Image (tube, rainbow, N blue to C red; front, side):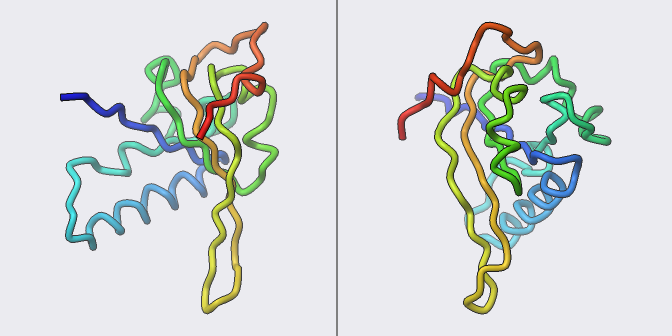
Amino acid sequence: MKQVKKILVVGMDRNRVASGLAFYRTKAIESSSNKLEANPAFETSSWHLFGGNGLMYERWFPVDQQNDKTLLLIGRNKADLIDGNVLSHIEQAQEIKEIKINKNGQQVGLYYYRVAKGYQSQPAIDKDPANNQLSD
């Protein structure tokens, strides 16, 4: 049986996106009839993986323990997902997609996300993963 690798969800800010994702992903699972064994709060990190300030996420997810992981990067700004520093820490990056948040038929928010494979805690100086995108 093929084992599925877990994806680490990374909120690309200090803590607001990461904390919101951890909280609401947990609430969604708790209210679902399809219970999962995983706890989303323990699978959600912050942009400290790329040198930003991640508050307690820095203690909960030490950068050197995340090597080779696949990440789902989620941010409020597209620029946070294409930053050269971010790209220097990953081997492959999928195209950026949007998540539109609607309430009562009106768009109230917009987030961007991309899958990033092969995280490395030490940036690769000579590598540009933007040229090595994953196919859908």
